[in-house]
Image (cartoon, rainbow, N blue to C red; front, side):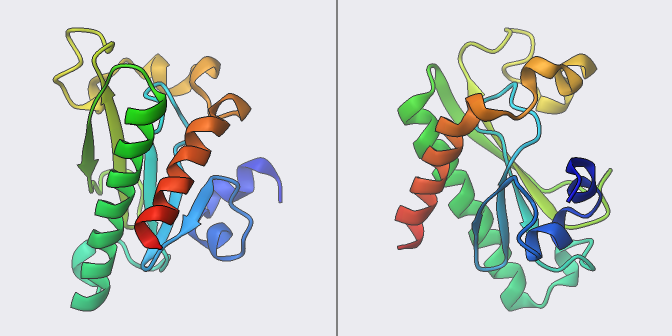
Length: 158
C-alpha cells in the first residue's frame, strides 16, 4: 500500500493490517501513534467500525468498550511518557468531531518544557507549522516511545 493510501482509509487499513501507525488492537478499536510528534507519545484511538462517526452511534456496550479503551490508552501513554520522556506532566484525552468523519479519541501527553503561553492551553492552539514540520513527523526516532506505549498497553490488558 502506498504511504498516503492508508491515511485516506485509516480504519479500513487498520482492519486489513496495512496501517503502519497501529500499535495494538484493543477491544473496540486500534491504538495508533500520532502522525505528528511535537509532543512525544501523542496517540489516537480509532474506532474499529469505519461507519461510526459519533460516540452516540455505538450501542451502549460498544460505547463503554471504546471509552474503556480510551482510558487504557491514556494510562499507557502516561506510564510510558513518565518513564522515558523528560518533563512529563499529564495526559489530555479528547473526543472531537470537527475534521475527521469517523469516531476517534486523541491522547495528548503534556510536558513542563512546553512554551509557557501554550502549556495550559489546548494543543490545537499550537502554531500550524508544528503540525506539518518535517522534524515533528512520525519516524523511526519515535520507535522507543511507540514501543514503550505498546508495552504498557500489554501490561494493562494482560
